[in-house]
Amino acid sequence: MDAMGLGRFIAIEGGEGAGKSTQARLLAEALSLRGIACKVTREPGGTPGAEAIRSLLLDPPGEGWEPESEALLFAAARADHVARLIRPALARGDWVICDRFVDSSRAYQGAAGALGDEAVVALHAIGSSGLLPDLTLVLSVSPEGAARRLAARDGSHADAIGGRPAEYHAQVDAAFRAFAAADPERFALVDGDGPVEAVHARIMAALERLC
Ligand code: Z5A
Image 1 (spheres, rainbow, N blue to C red):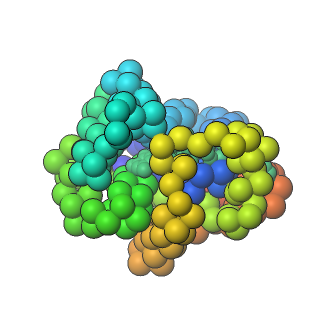
Image 2: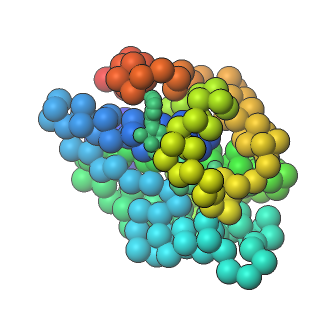
Image 3: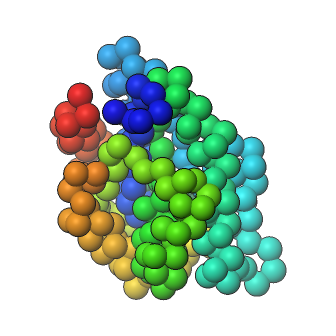
């Protein structure tokens, strides 16, 4: 149980096209059927300020951001999101389902972006008092499967981060797996390949530990 109230905080992580948004929606529907009030949100974003920062990050002006500026912007967006949406929802007793959270910064800016885990964790301590999810679901899909889904949805369009080289995304994927292996209490690694309903069933099974 979260220390601030009765709400539970669930983050869904993984690479692009892993099915996070789809599964966040299905999870919220399933929890609502059990009478649990849920707030589905996303990062970067979730509040007006954080959504404005999202635009700056995914469609950057000029030459784009240096790694340090990028990490600070993600942390600033998260700080606003935590203060104005996540903490109040948890305090009301709602469950929060967040499409990406701090482990995305650890994987993208910390591991693949080479800023390092310590720096990202320090920014999170300053911005969001180090708030962590009760459970972080890492959706793992084959690179081919994710590429097929993204091609079907987006064609050749990619944002500033999604368009980075395959090696960058491979490092992100390896980082998520390493986080899950290092902290099995907070993380559950979920096979994201296969039909939507099969993945949803795996997520519901992983959630049993919270009930
Ligand atoms: N980023 C970062 O660097 N640091 C941070 O701290 C944070 C984020 C928080 C956010 O972009 C970018 O910011 C992201 C990481 C970085 N860039 N990259 N890479 P975003 O929010 O636009 O993108 P995303 O988070 O990666 O989400 P996504 O591309 O929309 O993927 P998804 O949410 O995991 O997948 P989806 O939308 O649920 O599904 C994708 C498509 O596949 C869609 O058409 C579905 O209908 C389909 N789908 C879903 N599941 C299935 C199954 N099971 N079978 C077949 N088809 C499926």
